[in-house]
Amino acid sequence: MANTLLIEGTFEELSEELAVYIDGLSQSSVQSEIAPLLKDGNKVDALKKIVTASSALNSAPEREFVAAYNLLVHLVHQSGSPDIFLPKLCQNVSAPITSSPNNATGLALNVLSTIFNTLSPEQESRYHVLLAILKIVRNNSTFDQLTPQLAQLESWLDAWNMDAADQRKLYLAVSDVATEASEDEQAYQYLLKALRTAQSQEDASSEEARSLSVRALKQALVSPSHFDFHDLTQLDSIQALRQSEPVWFELLEIFNAQQLDDFSDFNEANPDFLSKADLDTAALERKMRLLTLSSIAASASQSRTLPYDAITKALQIPAEDVEMWAIDAVRVGLVEGKLSQQEKTFLVHRATYRVFGENQWREVASRLDMWRSSLQGVLRVVRQEKENYIRDRENELRDAENRQTGNGYRPNKQYRNAVEVE
Image (tube, rainbow, N blue to C red):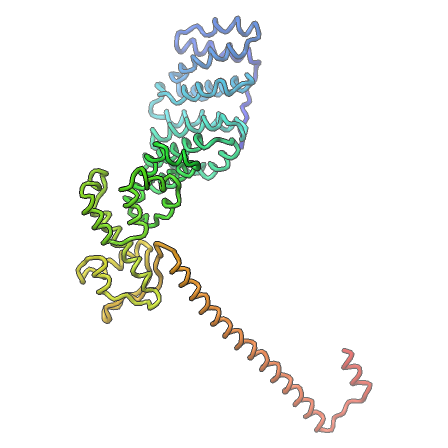
């Protein structure tokens, strides 16, 4: 919802007042410089001098800081050309506030929020104000103050009609803020949004896209809760790594669809890659074991039983550790099932398919056919029971009528006609 600043006075009077205030803070001569410009009606040049000198407001007493900047924001809007002044104004607000280091973040966000909300929703200037807000939030680790507004980010971008490069810049700024606040999942999701803006082949193959793609892949690998890599494989910039970064792409393919044996082969073929990429081999092995268990559980979904021996072999673990790994896989949501210590099997109730290809579609079709046959059988039973009920009811009514007739009761014709009409 847009805010409105209610400030009394003409543009000339308020400009003079603010210039005098700035001169008092910085021993400058803004008032004398703008006086002839205002006399000639040159509002824009007069305001340029005020905005340029407005960095002095950061030394204003805390109780006067917001009011002084609100007056300047009002003058900027009154100029008729706010886009000329807003970049410099946002830059000054984002600079250190020397008069109140303890409350500087709140003061700066207060002013920038006022600037943002006094602009109409479709004005592109909001984009630059939002970047300034993100800069302050990132430097001061106040991501929680930003989170409620992120739900509107897509609609804002649509209203501003920003090109792909500007959208990418904003998404990356949000991702960086989330990273600083240790909000890893949020940071990853906005990094993916940034990568999705690279829609042309040229953009997807650019150096920036390559760097961001490797960064996203690395974040997905190190995340202890991220096990689905399809969100990466669908991106054009990630597919471009097949040529520019073949080793990274091979690692992605392993975590997307392959098993622990393939990861071991990768490490043998690239012995220094993980350490140079600052990746924890032990953590990746753990994730790969869980993914492998998910794969073999999915392949056993027809019989629904997975022997302990099969888990031991696939995960390359001692037999006594099978249950621990199965419980871990259940805990992270990859599988659901029941362990049988007596039969040494894992009864699979549900397993996550890492790759959904032709075989999986056949399995889905087979299950749908089974469900259809089962439902058709249920429908036949329901129909038969309905027919039996109707037949039995008719027989009961007939018997009742016969009993009445047999007892000598015979309604006259007039009464029978009345009953039939009813």
